[in-house]
Length: 60
Length: 219
Image (cartoon, rainbow over all chains, first blue to last red):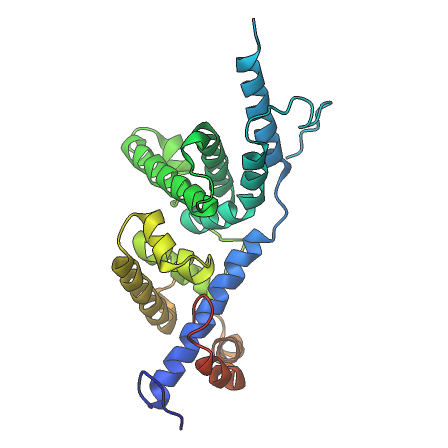
C-alpha cells in the first residue's frame, strides 16, 4: 500500500478516488455546455446592441 | 431561434471596442455553462446570459483592459442571478408567472439535459457551495479569481469547495435522498450499481490519478 497525505487506509483512498470521479463528472457537465453551439440569439443580441448604439450616436 | 436579417454585424460597426464585443461573444459558451449551473434550467440560463451581455456592454468602460474579462463577466452574471432571484422572491406570492420564471425553482431543472446522479446531487448543495465548486472544480478558476467573483476571501472559497465536495460525496452515498427518480427494479439496480462503481472508481486510473493529484483544476 502506498502512503499519501491523507493516510494509508483503503477507505480514504477509495474516498479520494470517488472525489476525483465527481470532479471529472462536474467538468464533463460544464464542458458539455461550453461545447454546445451558441444559439443565434446571442449574436443577434450583440447586433441589436450595436444598432441601438449607432442610433444614439446618429447626428440629428 | 434564428432571426435572419438583411444586414450583417459589419454594416454599422461602431469604432468603439469591436474587440470587446468579439471577446464577449467568445466567452458566451462559458457564461452559458456557469448560468446553467446556477439556474439549473436551459432557458433561464440563456436569459441570464443575455442580461449579462447587455449589462457588460453598458459598463464596458469600467472594465480594466488587461484584467480577467471572464472573471469580470462571471461576476456580473452572478450578481444578476441573485438580484433577479431576490426580485422574483418578492413577487412570488402574488405573481405566479414570476414565480414560475424564477431562476432555480423550475420543475424541470436540468443541467445540459443531464440527469446524472452528480447533477441531481449538485442541486441539493447550498448556493454558495455549489457556485464555489463549479467555479473552481469545473470552470478552472483559481481560488483567487473565484474569491473575487463571489466576493469573499480565498480561505472561504477553499472551505466552501471542500465542504461542497464532502457533501456531494455524502449525498451520492445516500441515493435515496436524491430528487425524484424512479427506483430501479432489482436487476436494473444491480447493473446500475455496477455501472456507477465503474464510473466512480476505475481501479487502475485511481492509482495514477492519486499521484497526479496536485495538478489540474480539481481532483
